[in-house]
Image 1 (tube, rainbow, N blue to C red):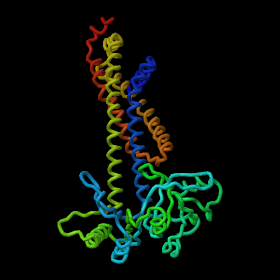
Image 2 (cartoon, rainbow, N blue to C red):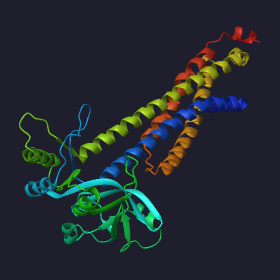
Image 3 (tube, helix red, strand yellow):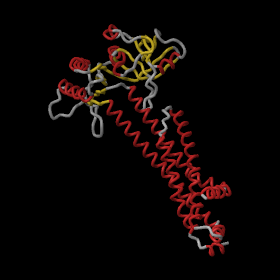
Image 4 (cartoon, one colour):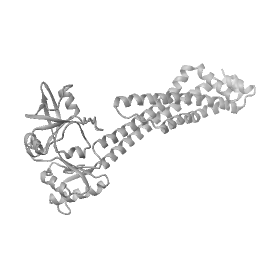
Length: 401
């Protein structure tokens, strides 16, 4: 009996193929949008987590000034070499403490030039950032102490300035300073903030201070904790030491900020997760719109087939059979739309992931939920037109023109 009902439903759908296609289009768009949005959101979250991991493990950022609404860092004293020495000598449970002083400069090689971010630092930078070299070497102690003009470049700088030519041993001009390239950093790619991490030049901190900045300021200090040490303990030690060294009395606010990479990563991940849920919810609304479309078309179909319904009831068809016929028709439309929507959503998510260069992470649960919801929409919104058809008076239906 069910098979015959299914055949009748397929026949009715094929009889009005264009209208049936337009009816299930709402379901297709709804299911496809939910799957695509959630899949892209999952990929974005994974990309953010991976990018945060590239910035270093168990890492603390120490900056002068306070950040946030109503706070200003303009009047805060920058860090200096003494702050760095004190942290290195007194902190326990850390792998490395690295100074960072940054600026934007123009680098030139031959006829090629590029504006890049230059960073004055030392060899601890490579430890705190988990950023090895793929060619060349790190800074020598004599270069760090004497302020020799040597530099290590990122892949983007190498590609833009040298192309396929070798870069090690060549000299580039950094502003007005002739600088020898001694190393090449491993490729990191874009960060989750959209910046190119490989568009960078590193040079010894003393060289940067003397030849580029003209001062001894340190903008950031990176502190990398050992794997078995809680970053919260190291953060508390950093705050205590800096308050002592910067002579901040009890009751006064800190004139510096210490940020934990784990907290930043957790915040970023939570933000992308919330956005994924919101996008999925917005896309899910189109499923409801598709369900309303099914109910509307089914009501029209019932009206058009009033005489057919009357004949079936007059020759002995039961109300339950008529109800099932129209209900199955609505469910079949929803299921067809769900299947097409799943394929469309996965295809769109795959194309978007490739274009955005994010991981393609399909959540089977979301696929099942979206498909199941499409079936539920067919049942709910198909029931009312089906019940209306089943409750028709056969005599009144046969009189219908």
